[in-house]
Amino acid sequence: MRKLRVAEIYAGIARTWEPFRQWRRCELGLLVDLDSLARDTYTDNFPRAPYWKRDLTWVRPDELEAQAGGKVDILLGCPPCQGFSDTGKRDPNDPRNAHIDVFARFVCGLGPRAVVMENVPLLAGSARYRRFTRRLEKAGYRWTAAVVNAALYGSCQTRQRLVLVAVRKGAGLDPELPAPTHGGGCVYFGYQSQKLIPLKHHHAELLGITPAAQQLQAKMRVISEVGQIPIPTLGDTLDGLPVMGSTNAVCLSHEPWQTSATMRRRMSFVNEGGRWKGGQDHYSHAYGRLHRRGLSRTITTYFANPGSGRFWHPVEDRPLSVREAARIQGIDDNLLFQGSLSGAARLVGNALDGAIAEVGYQAVRRALE
Image (cartoon, rainbow, N blue to C red):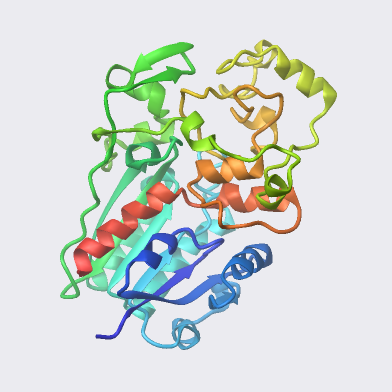
């Protein structure tokens, strides 16, 4: 039986494709992205990977199919989300918003058996999203979608994302997102209460339910049920890294950032899990220090900047390293970064959490097996 050919568009460092690598029925047909650094990083690690650097706005579905070597069975993609992000300007006229329509054009033009799309939660409240789902239905797809929290599927990060899975009628079972696997009855450090608290009684505080997710609860499913396996803590995730300055640490991009002496001194007075008191007029987690027995908030491309969020190391006077942020995102230590730390930070911050990628993969595998 012919293997299922998978293509990921807006691929970055191919995090949506990553869990499909373990399924023997699948083969990688093509990765597509306009980002040279993402392409070079991925092909440095996987030299045989077919990676096409193109602006998808100007690519036809038949051109992509030819480049992929034939019929695309599973289409994956994380279209640019800056125009919908709750940390951005939420500009409905942001030209990047149009990539949702581009993604729909490839779904309809390629007619894959299954589709996985990941994006920020606020997309689900937009007219573009409603138009996208109507196009799916008109093209003969059954679909399901929900806002999922990475921590409930095994990440130490409380990243929340919209995951949509569609299956063409007659190509498999109706799609169904897997139930959360993690949660358990453990206690974690709460950044608001500043103490260890049980997850079952402090769900919103520990899982960082975003305003966007709260707004969407009346319109669509937000998965909040808790699994049985304990969520790994930040300390569990960062444990075992080589000492900074060693050859192994440099190879892993586990290096300190150039942070000003003023900032280091300021943050040196902040206790583990706390915040700099002078930053109360900033974002609620800005200038915050993480806690080893807590969970991480969403890693962004600006995690080297302590004023952009809670990105300061739990006990050392420095921001998280690139490798620490990569581990939080579920990126294996075997994937290495070349070039500048700032370039690697951008790739890590834009990546899909591995636990969320697993949600889409499990839904597709269940439907097509």
